[in-house]
Length: 222
Image (cartoon, rainbow, N blue to C red):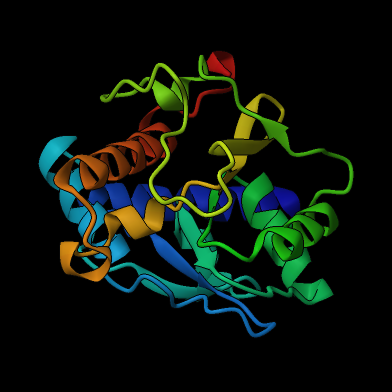
């Protein structure tokens, strides 16, 4: 089954390459949390990436559920929200298969989802621990340099921003950004009234994540 999923995933990526377009996903989940938060964030990030790091991503992310077959067509899936997040056993199994087959999940805590998402990640990969990524990790050193690691975008609890990961066979497959709020920084300026400097940091870090996933997530380098 895992072999079939890997072949299916590779086929989808090849098809996207031939079509000269990549599509990324927004994860829809149950539990009551607002998976749909920050509606302008991904379109703005995609536009920034297409302009500044020469990606060719469809301008709108597609909404995808953890248990769907469609998730295997997406090299990158983003999840956010402020509250509870729940996956069924079937969804966990499908999401795990997707990630082990070559997919990538970026979870950005929009403040309030931390205790819930940690529980779900533990169910997803009970054999692994979330590990904080050091500032030297390649994800912070793509087109844009972040020598101190993950930037702080929005203040909540006066805690430092942290980037955690799950690494499988040398490949980063889950990135969890906490006490940072990248997605808020990707939103339209009118939403949070962030300065251009703050928005620029958020978009550049987001572009680094996209670039790392699409171009540089090589087990040899991690």
